[in-house]
Length: 422
Image (cartoon, rainbow, N blue to C red; front, side, top):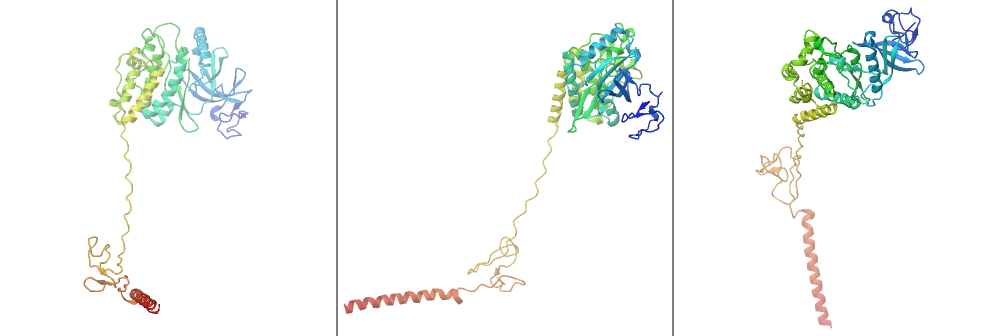
């Protein structure tokens, strides 16, 4: 019996498509992957394969009693051949399960499947790892890459406080999802798995020891088999940053040994000179040179120091950017032209555009539509104004004079009457 890899619906085994969601089932036939449909540790039903890496295969599974979707990683059997390494992994897995930073993937369970395979159950994430993102979209802007690595630094800082090193940081171990508001949200994967990739015994690359981790991001002390600390993870994050802003690893060669050798003795390549079209700010090169220093003493002291430097570099880059010029304000409309008006009782006409005087050119308009030259203005709408003394305007002063005279005469006659008749 095979479950649908998309919806988990149980199928009989002969169907070509899922009866619930219609997913094609040809790629998940029994024999294609014996883990599909299997139940691990009596509680995790394997539904579909999510991805495969150098250390194992990741599946989408469901807890049969909780009906909860999770992710389970089944490690390769050869990685669990040393009982000492398995015990070391189990100790580190217990420590990782205690991490509470939101940028660390949550470990829900771990154990041994069958007789020789280790499994790890984690929360089921939705998104894409940074390696796949870079292959899809190419280099990222430094501000975005710095913000993403700053979140990874928060996870590493908590782990380092518990003396837990990652030692296998690479783009594929940084998982990118989105918040509800659409912002990038990073989770660090695969804490504690690098030790399983190391063969038993001491030593480094120089005496034939197998080195765990991606060769593109390994620190020099990991390659030599020397003592490692938080600055080893800083170096790996520096290599990841180089990946993110250029789309290429800091060192490339035809073989893994060639890449590892360059980590040991090759100068740090200047991304600004190798990739001038990207227009990288000098601050990017400065941060990379410090994080990728061969000598751990010259690197950032830890994840917190690297995080602070990344954010400070973003601020300095923004401060160097020219301020955008504000758009010029729209032109203000001028005053509307005044219409010519005649002043009542005055021989001086009002002036305006097109009318005689300093504002415009042409003859002055007089009452009645005449010009100063005595000729009428064609189409003039200025009404004729009556002269002073004509009509009612001239009658009112005359009546006042008559009334005043009658008042004086009447007063004088009364005075004579009073003197004579008394």
